[in-house]
Length: 65
Image (cartoon, rainbow, N blue to C red; front, side, top):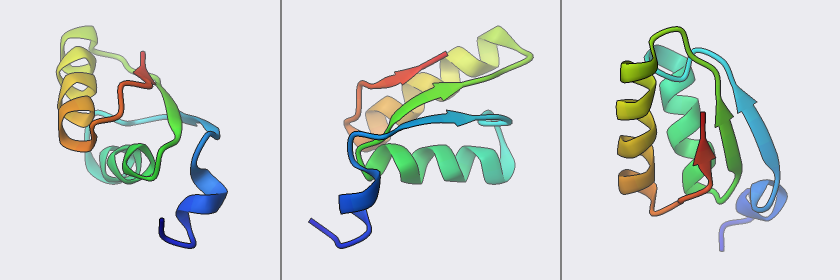
C-alpha cells in the first residue's frame, strides 16, 4: 500500500463536478486509493455513466450518486 493510501482508504468523500474535468480525475484517483465516494451531478445519465466507468477502472464499488 502506498503511504498516501493509508490516509484515504476507508474515508468518505463528496465530489462535485465529477462528470468531467478535474472533478472526474479527482474522483478516479480517490476511488483508486480506496475512498468511498458520493458524486453530485446535474445530468443523471452522464453521472450514471461516470459512476460505472469509475467503478470499472478502479475496482471500487463504493462509488455512489
